[in-house]
Image 1: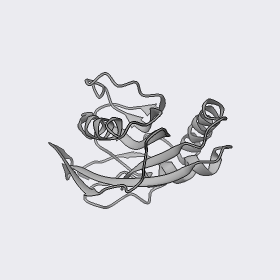
Image 2 (image 1 turned 45 degrees about the vertical axis):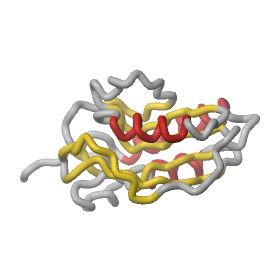
Image 3 (image 1 turned 135 degrees about the vertical axis):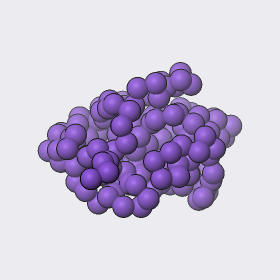
Length: 167
């Protein structure tokens, strides 16, 4: 086990408090990247002390445990983002390809601001030089599952974070 449910809950609370402070005069759109971010997004928004709106986008850039280096839109959001504060909610930033794709897409829609919250960040994940405003945990490059993160659609339901092993 890498992170326990208790450690995760404490860090999500800290991030929710920071977002609540940073957006106290706004009603941001919290944009979850499906499927992996759904647990983080749900826990985070329940702990936030501000009003927010929730939207989702579903992107695919992995096949099993390997990045395809290509981003495919499986479900697109249908919301006017112009002039709005947007908080992108990611489960994990690894290669940065998905984030680069989504950030560019949102930027073209003229939002007021774009912030990024990621439950996990891996080393060398920010090769595109994005400011990641809210980071849950920095972890090694190993493949992990749990707390929304999967391996071929399995293990999302685990309340803690684990390394994926061949055992």
